[in-house]
Length: 138
Image (cartoon, rainbow, N blue to C red; front, top):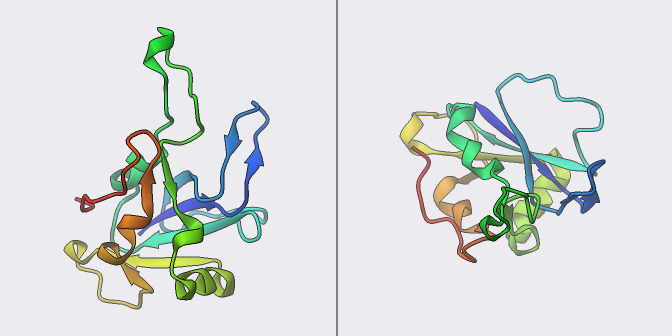
């Protein structure tokens, strides 16, 4: 299971780069020993049973501005979960449990889950293109 750590509040990092609510921070395989601070109110965990962490790394990409001639991030993350637009039930589940478990049927998981990837992928927003995710996790 991959676990995607997501900012639950806006914050400024030590480098001065801003993490905004809904920015993915890191993805780890199931069983990672998250620290005491890596939970609500600062973070939420989006769990993807039976999906390996490498399949979610695209959501960690920083945005860069090629017009500068160098790759300097202009925003912290290219992708952001549209947190305020999540269904109220999803936001309540995050408040109650600290995150969501998201089923990706192609990977064969049959245990409990909160939502399917089909239900939530449109809340993953690409800040560069201005479009929401339409792709499946493969």
